[in-house]
Length: 342
Image (cartoon, rainbow, N blue to C red; front, side):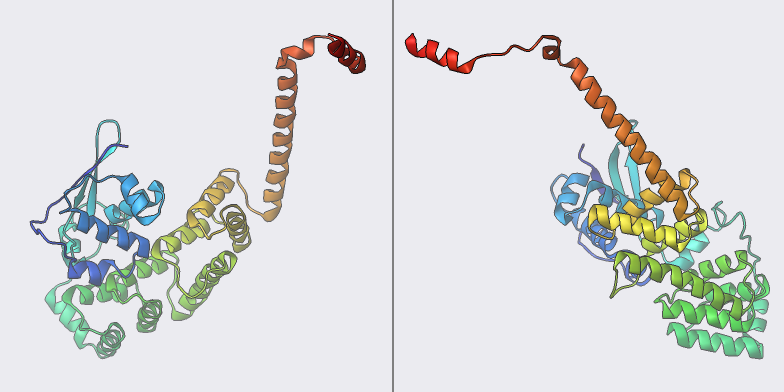
């Protein structure tokens, strides 16, 4: 693998970590991804060649693990991956971490996946002020500030007003939204906004609807943690994304996901979400819907493997040229006497 040019848009000549990265990016990221990002910052001023394989050796990871981390940070707009005409990674450009408010402003007119279904109104100062002065809203905003531990920004007010005005969320539902997110370690209004959009798409309109949905959501995550034997920590963001993919995109129930987790442990002796994802993607392509379908698929695979093994044995026997000769018999006692007499 070729060496990769590592460069930055920043003029800094020392290794430093942006407060924006710490405040808005680090908490939601997988710990290994954070270590890789910090090492990239350190390598910027190092006078040595850089490559994926060297980084993999440094952290005792596979090259695939390193690439997955780089893709994650590229998705977060903290770096840009550069490729040559042969699709080989040739450069990594580190970008300045941008706060959620600034980033939203910079990308406001750019078409995104969310913007096609999330065209937001522009609220005036008078509308925001009216929302703030409303008695019920005022109490709600006070509670939210207590939950997140700091005053709300104008952008935060606009987001919460959007939940109330456009998504038609009640004050009880908004309070439960904030409470549940904070309980799960997420105090970012931007993160809460993603959950709000998800609830709206699922036709959740009351706090009771949200509690039922949240209960099913947590049961699935706890089920995966139990199947993998994970305890003492919460699932990382990329792990949660994979579980959501298995349930939402693939439509798998917990029993099928647990079976994939079990087979992953049998094959790797560790809770590898990537390995389980490969199994579940294959089952999805095979239109698996029930555990019985998996049993049928296993049986077909075993028959195919046995048939293939028999064919290989027959071919090896047929290809052995020594089997074309008739076998001779020898009197070993007589041969021994002849040798001694000579």
